[in-house]
Amino acid sequence: MGLTNNDILKKLRVAHKLRDTDIVEICALVDFKVSKAELGALFRSEDHPKYMECQDQILRNFLNGLVIHLRGPMPKKGEKK
Image (tube, rainbow, N blue to C red):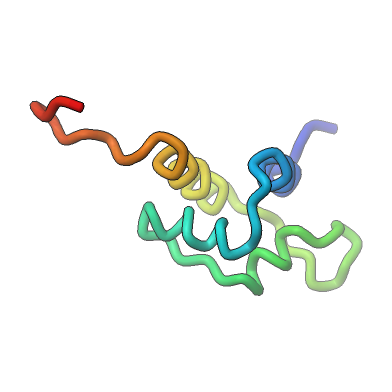
């Protein structure tokens, strides 16, 4: 069995030492809204009744926001760094 989106999200959270508020802010960088309650459901164990599977859209937006968080926004075309 491979890694699930939930596993990837958990590993990135630990590797970058992120808190729930940090993840909410990172998602906001790409205009994606996620609540702390949703994050709590994503980080629960699979056998918990309130567990929620991390959909591709959530992980994709988090990864795009993480790139902006770590590198900064992309410069506009024709604009130098």
